Image 1: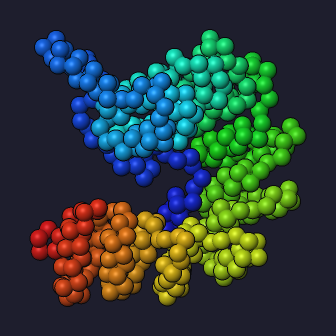
Image 2: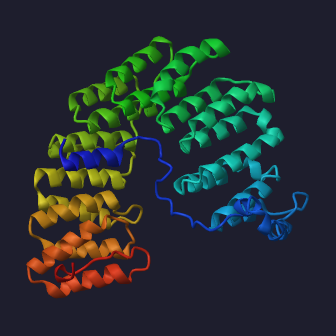
Image 3: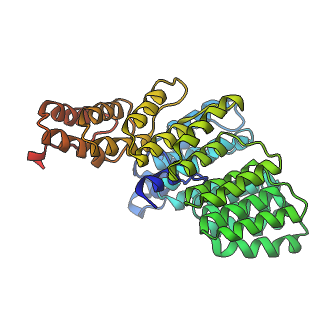
Length: 423
């Protein structure tokens, strides 16, 4: 598989969001939790600091705007204070209903690799009456799974009967999802075949979709198709998520013919494709260098009342880059840049900048790099450095210096670019 086709595949893969996706790292300031476990010499000061901090937090009996508590959590940058605030605010029952703040907080901690703090927050939740509700347990299982802490997720599932909480297909699916997110593929097949009989539950479409996703990520695509056959045999109709998972995988892994078979199967089942379905097929057409057919497919979107997004344009740009058509690649980029509702992203520039540089068009690459920096798009610094080096080789010294200065002065990116003579 070529570099560009691999890049397109990664761009459109349906893998579940990784905990480290687009999250800014937190500071490593000393937390209150660590202070409380400090040496005897500091225990008195620790006690005073902790009491002072907790007294500043609203008491759960106080009428308060839950949104303001969530905003406070979002804005908190210190890991210790983040955990202490979350535990304190969790005393509000309405706060415990806010799924978004739980997910955001746990993923932030996962990115910082503070797994002990994740455990501190989630284990603290078990003292509330919500733990008798399956939805709440499913949330804890899912959050542990997204953090890569599968043993903790499995423990929550196993403890549900102790909390007088029934385990149905809902928590079963949460456990399967935790397997996928934690990459515990060696466990998921056993769970899928053993737990339904043990718990007297029947897997549903979501269950099968998770299994298909697992097999796709494992690369055992024949097993993924077998799972599709099994769900239909058991009287379950696959949905657009089922087919999108398969389309992304087959088209993205250079199995275009098999991808077309999945597309035909989707149409035969009268499942309406969405923009993600079309984007997956566009990746397949681009990888096969069938750009005329790709153009026709994009033209169909309007009739289907679908709107092209950045992934659509990236498929076209990447396809023309692989096809060696620089003017067409530029044309599709211009169309993307003219849109108000979507913008070029890291994948766009990672495909386009090297391609125009290979064709010697460093003036255009220079303009693209200025857009990258001004739009605060985080690309690899080497991408920009290669443009600086190319500009110098073409005796475009002022442009190279401008790019170096932009990379240094932008407060968001701080690209450490250098002139060739300074490297």
